[in-house]
Length: 227
Image (cartoon, rainbow, N blue to C red; front, side):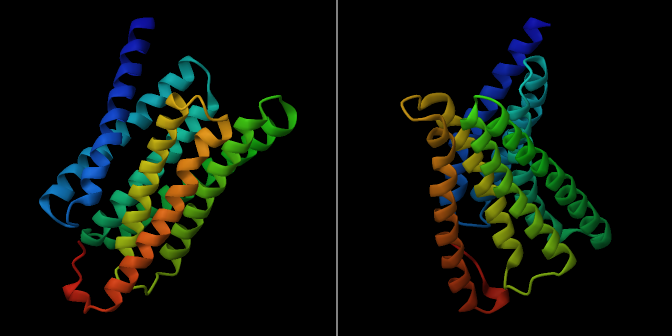
């Protein structure tokens, strides 16, 4: 059993490193190009492997925080992928049902993450991880609620799927960066080590989203091609 655990752990680390380094390639590539699509898919499947290997790791060495954060990163990457893929779906009803199920299930997970964070912060000495869990839970909860709102009341924002794709993929990368920081930046306090990517990344995403909104609003829908 120990050998299986070690193998899964190495696979988890390898997938995480892959996701960490290939994401910037997809980010800087021309959006919609073969380079962007190829490396974006590598990043997505790497994140899937990261999440699914984190689950047995967190069970073998009981760690509910690792488990919930794995679900958090998986939800963001799947949401980013679905935002792009769903617009090409042949069965729109089935596609919307899948997205509603994903958003609804993730919302419950984020409520659990917030609940675990409150319990940890208030009833144990590990206040830092409680604060981190609450912060991640609130970010994820906001994302899930936004998803459900758009599914029940579709947005009229031009290229709305584009922004959902960006938010999901970039948010997933921020989760990867957070894990990298937590493992390597021991000179920082635990809360800072985990949350600085979320704070700076959130600001960066807002700036990038506003840039593209202004860009898209100046162009006819059929001619919107981002670089």
